[in-house]
Amino acid sequence: MFPENSVGVVVPRKMHCNEPLVLRSGAVLPGFELVFETYGTLNAARSNAVLVCHALSGSHHVAGRYADDPDNLGWWDNLVGPGKPLDTGKFFVVGVNNLGGCYGSTGPLSMNPETGRVYGADFPLVTVEDWVAAQARLADRLGIETWAAVIGGSLGGMQALEWSLQFPERIRHAMVIASAPKLSAQNIAFNEVARQAILSDPDFHDGYYADHGVVPVNGLRLARMVGHITYLSDSQMAEKFGRQLRHGEHKFSYDVDFEIESYLRYQGNKFAGFFDANTYLMTTKALDYFDPAYDYDGNLAAALARAKARFFVASFSTDWRFAPSRSREIVFALLDNRLRVVYAEIDCDAGHDSFLLDDRHYHAVLRAYLENIAV
Image 1 (tube, helix red, strand yellow):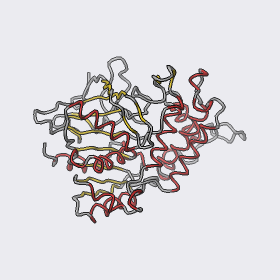
Image 2 (cartoon, one colour):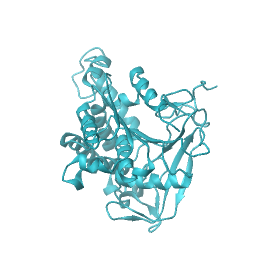
Image 3 (cartoon, helix red, strand yellow):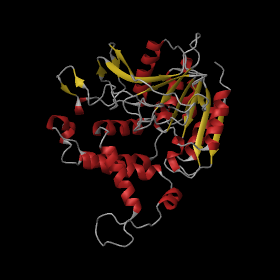
Image 4 (cartoon, rainbow, N blue to C red):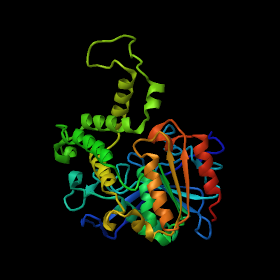
């Protein structure tokens, strides 16, 4: 049995696109596949569709469970469903695994039609702009001319922002949560340390580890551990772990002494068991490259002048990876263009991961905004 507000059992779908996709790097994909899921019903006017964009390790599985894997709950299930803030009684919600992902969409784990072997390192670098271009192909296939809203947190928020710039006529509301207009030097530095952990793993084999029947597990573990530190706030770490000892005493070794060490190792091992190393490298580079103001001499207001959507921007008080000041940069640039924007700065002690949680204040402002979107 499922709760009344659950979307229940869901089934992934796949779209195959035969038309070539020219990437921002200049490389060309001759065709590609995207895995996606939908929740709710598309109305007759096709005006109630909402696209959910995922962050670094997210996927198309946004809500619900699988019949053959009931423990696999969608990563934003607390937000999406009947009566939830993103109400599937009102909206037709679409979740998609981005191009280059490792959950079934065409990516480094896919077969390269030109060589007959797994792409591996031969898969071209894709960017936020490329993801949005591919998502637009999916919208075309579903018969959706205009999204009622595009919503995402972190890297997903960057995609929502890019939708408003690349396809300003095809999005009515852009919901940018716990995000930034571009990465800071510190954020790029964290990404580079994580990449070097993977690139220096002896099992990486220049990205062709699939040919050797191995996975750069140690590199992935370290990359995730570094990343996870940036997702949590200092106060949350202190509250959950503090300086608690794993065994009640110092072991005077390099094995686990503190509970926080145990937690990070657990998260690293878990991540290395399902995520692809080449996808991780590519996705962190997409984060690094995203900068709408790049072609406008760094002027974000000039870059956002193309937008026509209404905006919802939210940040969290303890998010130091994408601090509230970064969200306010987006808000001020939108206001400079006299665009409509609602901004919420939410007091939550969970750091960057706050956007994934069922925080009542956070969900209340999301619900209020979404209820006022006309379909």
